[in-house]
Length: 407
Ligand SMILES: Cc1cc2nc3c(=O)[nH]c(=O)nc-3n(C[C@H](O)[C@H](O)[C@H](O)COP(=O)(O)OP(=O)(O)OC[C@H]3O[C@@H](n4cnc5c(N)ncnc54)[C@H](O)[C@@H]3O)c2cc1C
Image (cartoon, rainbow, N blue to C red; front, side, top):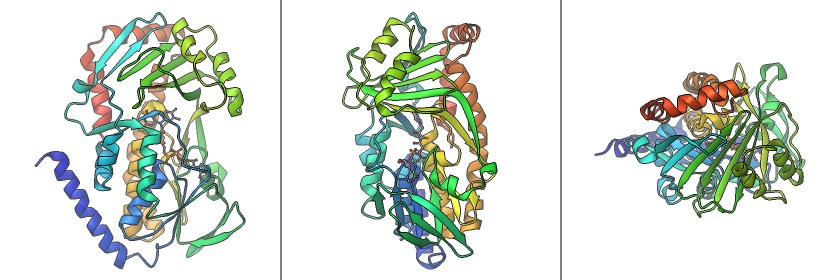
């Protein structure tokens, strides 16, 4: 039996045990769970709760499940959890099929090329776009959870034995515990945690993501173009289109309205190479561009009474970690496993003890990665470019393999 199959069996046994405990042990205490946010973390939490016999309430602010289509990777623990949830066939169908990547300087010269077959050999890893991952999670969760879109929590009052939640439609409901899985701009975090316990570590960068026609004929490839203060990653979508992720140095925190984002992107990439300019010129003009500033969230504790935050709401690793989606998946899995076993506060402590050591390492490493990918001076850019050109390929292979073979 292969390692992956053995792990899947182990997970299946764990699920059975969880189901048993869910029906007997804590079911009275934690049976009514409210999840804010139907993203990766929220839907994963809902699926694990449903496996254990609960029917959670999931509230999503957007009118439907969001569809930002950038590339994400599920590897290691997140991959095995997805397997144990029975999602792998549907996820595999949507795998993006990228086979290689390359990194380029402003003149278009290739600094580093990696072959994904070599790079990921023997690793459990799946690359797909976030909208595809969310669609698979949503499809599985909508039968087993009460999912309400176009709604958000506006007030939360904790009692000793529960939380009273008031929603944006004016209705109130009592829950045993609340999971804040509502991303970087989490509403649950703002409503439940003292402001002095929330630190937003700004990276001084803004990000945009868009889909555009594949006018450059990029095939099954991830291609990065880097210059001082600016970065562009391009990838081929499953349908053969083009996805673009743009990052630029900026201290701005206000995100322009959708109709102004194409102009903002033009302004941010003024004076770039002809190639990058042509990509920017092909971005949609009538909305359809995701845009935000890049921040990590730092909190001394991820739980307050009967409320816990998970995924980006708790720590937001940002795209330069390459592991934000996997961390959201893992965090939700650990949180729910604990919640089925224990009363909320003890469960939240166990979840945090399991996840925090990993996140504490990834957050600073990601800040270094951001400085590497988006150098702030010509001097640093030259140093980085020379390292990428002249260090042996094996150094970079070892870096990426190390990253994707850990929890
Ligand atoms: C451009 C870009 C590229 C990225 N690239 C990668 C990558 O290559 N690899 C990787 O692993 N990760 C990547 N990430 C990060 C990854 O997408 C996130 O870490 C991951 O989606 C976090 O999942 P989450 O469920 O915690 O939060 P989200 O996915 O942000 O989901 C939160 C959900 O909550 C909803 N919501 C927000 N506020 C409320 C509210 N008040 N009430 C109810 N619902 C609410 C939102 O609409 C959303 O559906 C990237 C992110 C960006 C922006």
